[in-house]
Structure formats: C-alpha cells, structure tokens
Image 1 (cartoon, rainbow, N blue to C red):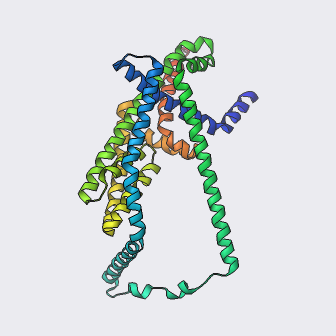
Image 2: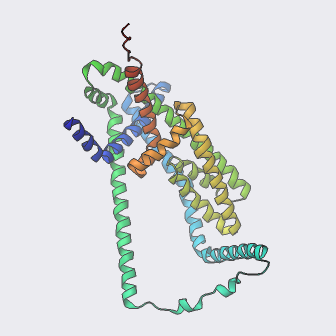
Length: 351
C-alpha cells in the first residue's frame, strides 16, 4: 500500500512532464493520421510520406502567417497614430451614455461634461527620484519575468515538437514499448484499447477542424456585415486560435477590434459584441454538439472536463482537456466498465 501511495505521489509530482508527453503523443497522432491518409491516396514509403506531410504543414503555417501578419503590421502603425484620438472618442461616448442614463433617472444633468474632467494638475506633477527609480525597477523586474516565462514556454514547445517528431518516425516501436508496461495476460486486450484511443483521438481532431471552420465562417459573416477591414485575415486568425480553448477566442478578438477602431469607435464595440456571441455559440453549442457526434462525448462532460483539468493542471490542462477526456472515456468504458463491472457476478443467496 505504501508503494502504491508513493507511486501516486511521484506521478503527481511529474504531472506537468506527463502532460507534455501526452501533448506530444496527440501531435504525433495527428501527423500519423495525415501520413496514413496520404499513403492511402498515393502509395509510397512511410518516411517520404512523413516528410511530405511535415513540409505541407510548414507551408500551410507560412501561408497563414503571410495572410495574417503583413496586413496587421500595416494597420498597427496606423493604429498607434490614431489610438489617442480614438481613445478620447470612446471616453466621450461613454460619458455621453452615462450622462443620458443619469438624466433619465434623476431628471437632471448629474454627470459632469467631458471638458470638466480634464485633469491638468496631475499632468504637471513630476515624480521624485525615489518614485521614478521604484517604477523603473518594477518595470525591469516585470520584463525579466515576462522573458523568463516566454523562454520557458518556448522550451516546452520545442520539447513537445521534438518528442512528437520522434514518435512519428517510429510509432510502432514506441507502441511496443508502451505495451510492455502492461501485464502479459492483458497485452492483446491493451493493444485493442490503444487502437480505440487512436481512433477516438482522430475523430476528436476532425471535430476540432469542424469547430474551427464554423468559427471562421461565423466571423467572416459578422465582420462582413459590420464592414470591418481585413475580413479574411481576422476570420482566419479566429479559426486558428479556436484550437486553444477560451484563451484563443479571447486573443482573436483583439485584432479585429483594433482594426475596427481605426474606422469608428462604435465598430469596435460591435465587433466585441459579435465575437462574444460567436464564442458563446462555439463553446456551448458547436463544440459540445460536434464532440458528441464525433467521439460520443456528452456536452456536459465536455464542459466539465475543461473546468476540471484546468483546475488540476493549469493552462496546459485547459489546452489538453478534450483529448484527455476522449482518452479517459475510452479507458473507463473498455477497462472499468467492460472488463470489470460487466463481468462482476453476484453470489446467489443461500436458500
């Protein structure tokens, strides 16, 4: 019993490494699925198919970056020039709305005009040396912390990519090593369960593709109706970032709002409202429905898995919540229910 508890504690202490390994396995599964599809269409050696798939993915990423990045760089310089004017316009609109509401409630202009809110005094105040030094030091510490977190994230990403590439080159060898960890009497059954886990992950990937495509179409329609520039780039960015649950859709809102802010401030607010509606439709309707159709994962379990794995493993747990839930569903169904509970025989009562 002590050894079992010690093993659980050891695994929990290595949870981040194990989650990174699982992410690498999922990525390797995606590559192997593409390789299998390519070899079915065009018979060829597996190494050549793998090289073609990796090259195609790199070209796809480069093409997406070419569509998204240059227009935003051009618009960003213009945004920096017009940002103060747009910000002042937004403040004026907010004050006017509050003034209208207060006048409707209290029957008088209870809110000061925007010109009365100009604070000329504080702008003339010059901080002393100690305050300036403290501000500079805190800013440098913040930059160092940001650089450290960025470097840590890059190292983790490289680790996942390297392990995924190694597994993709020799998937059967790593599969055999994994099966050796299973007791000999259960290896044949374990091999079938691994096949089912792979099929479930492939179906999940198709579901993610369908969900991202739906977000791309909805964002394209919304931005076109609102008359926002760079519709293709913004919609493509929303579809790509949709792979990252919750965080990705939030990040995808920033760029179209910035572009809309260059035209009129009300468009930025309209884009925010449209994206909030699209994100809610995607989170509570599209993704649960697609996952239920693809991998038979109930909508409630989809949301619960995202919440649970985020609490347990943090941001990486949120990113890997759905593939973890898919694999755990197969293991629980085949091992716990089929192999244990379904074969449980009750003793007949003694007459």
